Length: 218
Image 1: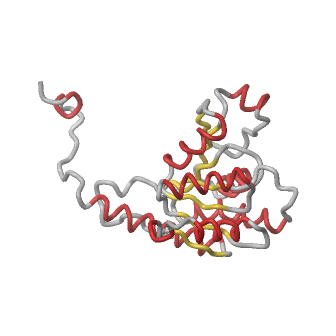
Image 2: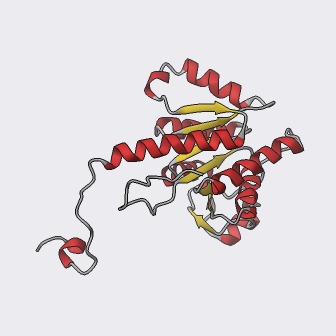
Image 3: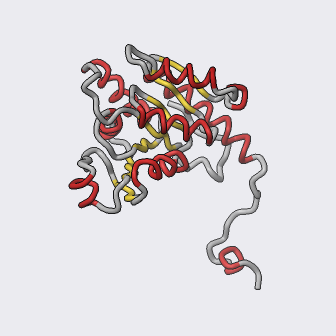
């Protein structure tokens, strides 16, 4: 397990947030494939992070299940406006999530918020929706881990990166077939990035009793 930002006493309490992306419809996957997705969720928790998903069926739900089996935090971002629409219109689950944020932005808008909410994205086996989530994260330059296996998603992503003419702009993308190793590498990328970013943070401590800290000097 990593000790995220252990040298940063001011922000070390903040847990990393890792989003899992993958197919909601999994008829093309084997039980062994789905077990790997569950293991991703387990490893996110075992290595000290929080799991974030699109609150959908399939790969994200298997990862959320793994997270909850390890007693960790699982957050879902739904495309729906509320619980009823989430269940009745979108036919999405409520299981294996500690709380769900109802974005009301549909799948496309939800994907943007999903990326912005997390520190990194792990891409599992998927279809066009998963490729959209990859593209959003790529544009946002999020650290990413791509789970490789006997499906096509990882090969398609490699081809997209190669033909994007922008591969040199985004170096924080790794490929691995082992969930434990993949999560570990992703969290190390996030840790390194956060340490660099926080070097320029203000050093003063926030005082909640100070009005000027909340409203500014008047």
